[in-house]
Amino acid sequence: MKWQADVDLALPGVLAAAREPGVELHTFGGYFGEHLQEKKGPIDRPQMVAGLPYHYHALTQYYAYQRDAGILDIAAVPLRPDLAFNRGRSGQKWMEMALHSTATVLQRLEPYWQAEEEVTCLKADAPDEWQDQLLRLVRDPVLRRRIGESARAVVLAGHTLEARRPLWEALVTEVSDRWLTAPEKRHDPLEDIVTESNNAPEVSG
Image (tube, rainbow, N blue to C red; front, top):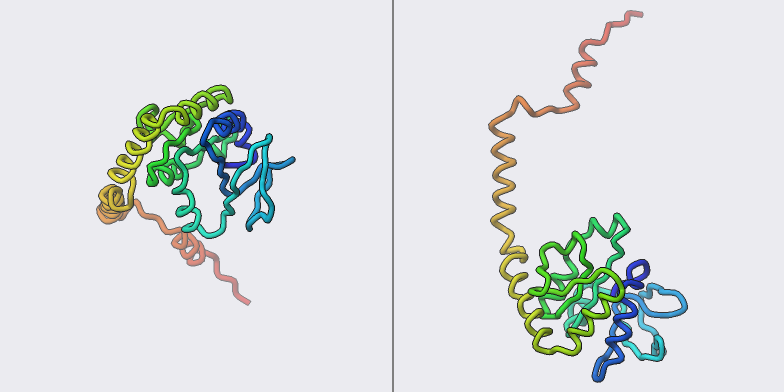
């Protein structure tokens, strides 16, 4: 789960899913309380929300988060769509979950355009849809496995550094070629300063 401004979208659905038989609720980086808060270290008491226990995982070192996230079968990644900051995010969270073959419910929003709905993820907008999608994954292990494995295959095939390397090489080549073949288009602001200095009138004492 993610936190604060985003969590209200998915919270009713998360709680409904957590009440299903055999489901455990885990949170990463935040915990449920009277107010949602961000904690940097372990909490020394059992955590409860709406009568349900949940396991808190502190966001400490990134590799530890990546390791611990592997325990998830299902992940919820809500984003409030009315926040411009959220619309400018990347699809990194989906990719992180996909590498663990975790079936993910994502906000139906621009950052997750790479994730194909019903193929490599499920998507939701309003709280009711979040609940429906999360319950689908909880109750259907075949769907859960198919979504998670498809997402992992897509990310490994097209979104690793090695997979994206040709695109970066092509971009660097294109920019370099333009720079080298059109030197007259280059402009150094320092040249203006030097020119102004050379053209300044001499002052004699």
